[in-house]
Image (cartoon, each protein chain N blue to C red):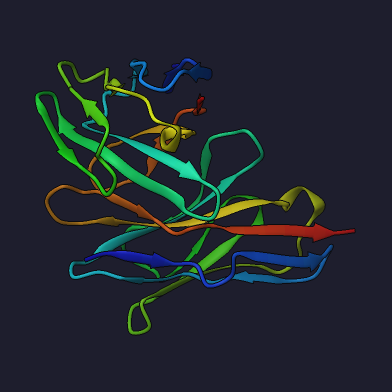
Length: 114
Length: 111
């Protein structure tokens, strides 16, 4: 069975401070890893992805994430947040096996405080 | 390129009514899927398809039907709407081994 756990449902952080949004997964097969962002009343858009290669991946808007296979984690980081980063963030895995389904975490609401 | 188009954007149904949520894509993606998003529960997979003529159930398929007669379209049917189906529904498509692309969502209220 596959599952994605986002440990923090809400993360408040002051503007220009660093932030880390945590994501752990469990899967019986190998996976691809993704982070998506959702602004109010919009669909999800891709922040970054890990498909293979370097375990440190960089995405849009200054975000980065590191794949840690031994800890089955894919935490999202940004060194200095802006007001515009206030949004819902979702971690997702996609099975590399037959079916290729995506599974999503429950989301982390990031609020940047001026 | 329109990407992933969902219609309608908003819908109010009475309990027991049926309706179809439309999803169309112009990216020639093999994989298409439907999710529902509820507060505190993230996105839950309803049904998915890996190609025309092939569909399968996700985590929460009860009360929903799908079909995939073409690569481009993947409609989601609610057979007899219930208040528990009040949610925001997203269609997502993908090529093999890459990220998903999402539509803008359909906000459904069942009264």
